[in-house]
Length: 384
Image 1 (tube, rainbow, N blue to C red):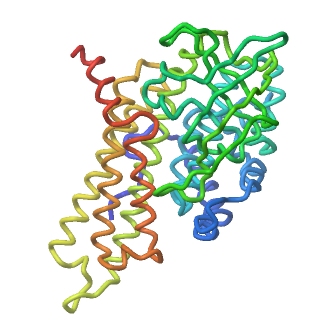
Image 2 (cartoon, rainbow, N blue to C red; image 1 turned 30 degrees about the horizontal axis):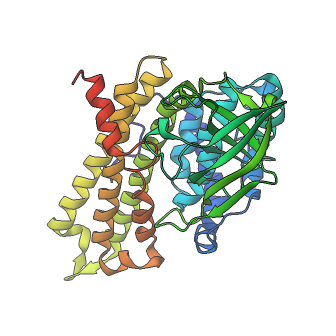
Image 3 (spheres, rainbow, N blue to C red; image 1 turned 30 degrees about the vertical axis):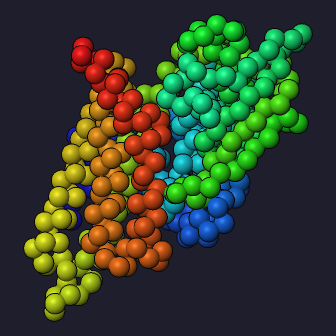
């Protein structure tokens, strides 16, 4: 079996001890309920409280706000281990809270915003969502139309967001809005919007990620006070770009970990499944497929860890992170498809969960920046 060791990775003994702790938690608290939550199209909010009690929601945040005082690598370990929970939607819901919605509050928020939002988010008392995408503005962030009209004491927000992970359950939503009539990237601001009258969510049905609550959110004359402005007014595009690299790294890490899990399961199946008098793992055609999968997993892990090391060292890693995101997402879908094929008819059945892994993996080349956008970014970094 292909080694699962963090090849060339930046993880220390401390990180590996954390990994073992998270893996035990996932096996005990998440994995046994994955199918139940997938069928329910929901997982309980109490999951966040349990993660918080174990110290996993604030791994990279300082103790002053209730965190564990670690760094990005601690969160990287969490993302890798969540791939073993058995549900891409569950991992996505947790990941959106930890890796996408709360980091801007920490980085750009005031001490009061830390107290009111970040501290309870780390404690699992408030669930967060990040809302940027709109029905007419996905990759083209500058085209957002949700408008925040200035009034005494704050703004009144009207507009719609869509494809928002945690969009149905979030207690607060870190929301990109237009605060001027000026077009383009200028005039985008971020507001932290509490769940209240005028904030209406509509849960969406999806190909995969069934346990997560992906939703459209409508804002209808929602008053947002001045103190809920996150960062500087009209300079929200910088906030968007600041977290993109980390979001894309998390997606790459999750994809590699997911491929590893699928590979392990498929090897176990191939050793047990008998065809023509021997385990199918002993047939050359299957051995070669498994060898190709192992090579893909290893290659993607190396690319991803290289980007992770550069990012954690504070170097300009836009090119490497973009490459990692581009390389891993389509590869993950291909690996899941290959693993499903090796399972044969069993792979198409719900029982073996490979069909779920294939469905969940299909979002990778779309979310966090499509493959096409990644190639455009790479073209620019390459001077093309």
